Length: 191
Length: 167
Image 1 (spheres, rainbow over the protein chains, first blue to last red):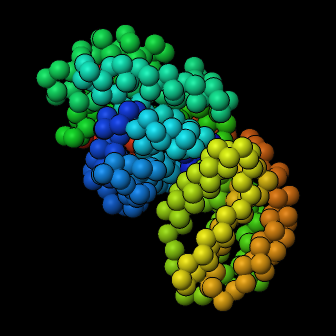
Image 2 (spheres, rainbow over the protein chains, first blue to last red; image 1 turned 90 degrees about the vertical axis):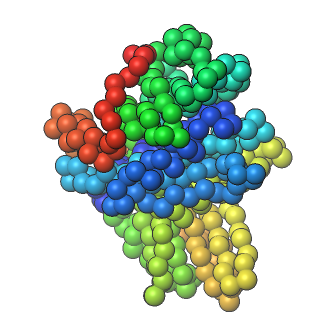
């Protein structure tokens, strides 16, 4: 849940990058860290890795500076995607203000993506959040892969709620910032 | 979902007093999401509150999930013992917690007693944090939204793509 600290004139919001293992969540966060001006970014933190995968979460604080005398900060988290870390995902989701769902566009990942979204909906229900009203952005990542499904197919199977969606090749940075900007706007609109 | 708005009048003073009583190197007051509300740092100490907040919140959330797996619904405190430092984390009500880094010479039992007293004092100070319309009015204003959009476009830029689908 966002924090509006009236004494310190601060607004702090949390966006969680969610999706299956190796869908590109960490790659998104790493690109944002690499491309954001040093004055607007904090330290990129990866809490414990195992076999080069996110074990607990990645964390990147972003500072948008003073806006109408409020210091606006966004904290980005990416959750571990592997099935066995579901409790870690639930823990990180609890205080989220917005979600970026990073889908792997490859044909053989469609079913796993679908299952992951079902899990996400169940988690949101479990923690008392209304998914229909929650800030959500879909990202169709790995568009450069030869077996990538069309965006229309991904929309049909994975975007039943009609959330804003972006095609991306996160490894090259394509679609990363449009996704982030939209997520930030949706979160701020819900405060 | 509306955000929390936390006035820190009195909170900072109580936290500083607690830090002094314990002889803490660092004390951070956080909400459960890991957002820093305020901090107290001992003489000559430096810290990275934002990073500490994120890791502390993750640790606390993980401990709570671990407790749940054993059938326990609560997780009120965590104590970590190191070679030079102890780290004590204590929940305040159901929304906040604070984390204390202290020298090993300090007795953890004393830290726990003083932290519990501080938590009892801080809870009512944090309780009336409910909404203040002036902050919400500012955030909801068109001028704020426009400047917020400008900041996003200025800081997060490499292209200006539009959504490919959805709403």
